[in-house]
Length: 124
Image 1 (spheres, rainbow, N blue to C red):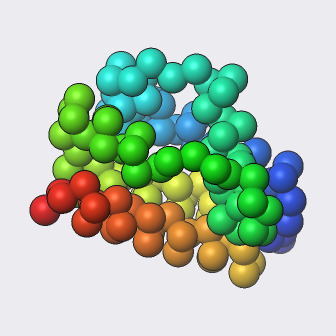
Image 2: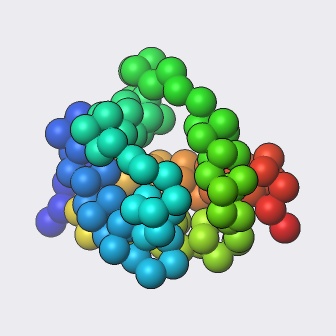
C-alpha cells in the first residue's frame, strides 16, 4: 500500500520522478531540454518549494509562475496538447508513488494550474 504525500522528501520524490519522465517525453521534453536552458540545481528546489507550498502552505515559494510560462510561450508557442501531456505525466507520477488526500490534492492542483495557465496565456 502506498502512503500519501506527507513531507518535503515526498515532494522531492514526486518532482524528481516527474522531471525524469517529462524531460524524455517527445511532446513536452523539448521545453525542458532545448527551449529554455534550465539549471537543474536551481530549478528542482524551486519546484519543490512550489509544490510544498501548494500542498502544505509553507510560504516557501515566491516565484512568478506566469511570467516564466509566458516567456516559454513566446519562444515556442504552447498548445493544449502540451498541457494535457504535462498533466498526464504529473498525475501518472503521483499515482505511481502515492495515494491519499494530498496525492489527490496535488493532481487537482496540477489540473487547475494547467487550465489557469492556458487561459492567462491565451491558448485556445
